[in-house]
Length: 159
Image (cartoon, rainbow, N blue to C red):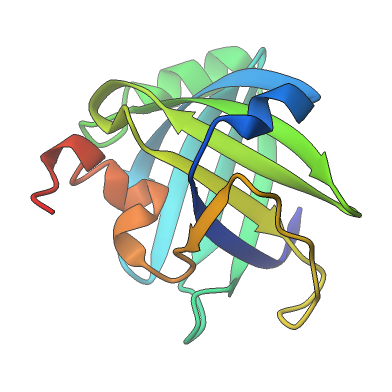
């Protein structure tokens, strides 16, 4: 499936989202390609696998091309073995708020301590409600992209 993804990203200031989460799932993902113009991601999400290609974001970092297809768990597991060295692991919580659902990722491993909330929108100017636990916006800050966290993990940052 291909579409233009419109997404905003935020840091998370507290674990208040946990009480309202409707799902919690472990995700393992690696990157076959982390080129700035495109990324190719392999993801294990629960008992399913996915292959995703994402294009370069627009000037605000909010909108970019995304293509994704489902893989068997075996196919995805085999592709993970071909990925670049750092494999990301995280727990994703889906948290309904207002008319939207935030996806909150608690990173594990070399990115432990980083908690990011993502919100997919219909268009860039769409209004949405912000819960109390939502922190500063990081949309377009490339170091927070999963592909970049697989190159320079959060625990290696100097600031």
